[in-house]
Image (cartoon, rainbow, N blue to C red; front, top):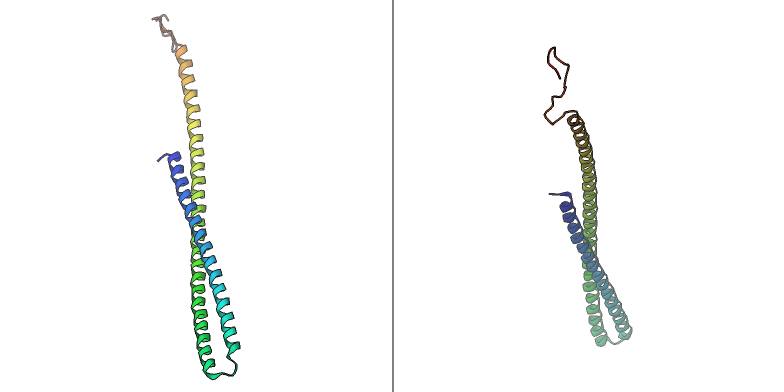
Length: 165
């Protein structure tokens, strides 16, 4: 896999992770709104329970009915409190998922940086090889220039006795 192709894959991975982080943030925001709604319900139920208890006065029959209503209101508070706890757990879980996604993003960015470094090092090796090849070509051209290619003999070494050059 080429470094460009590898980098594009990492960028797509980063994009998917970033999208998941946005989704988790949206879920956390929704859970926070649900918590606020539950708290408002609890406050209303408590106010109603207080109002009911205040009206009880001295009437026993009416008092029993009002106590039962207050019990129902408290049951509602307990139920709503459980919903708050559930929402808190959801927010906590969403936060943990965001942390994991952030760590994944960091690892992806580090991997891309490593690939970029490796590509740069590879380019340096290629540049050195091209420079070496150019020097070899220049050397071969220089040596070839010393030969006469028009059919004349060329001296390539010491002249042997009796053999004209």
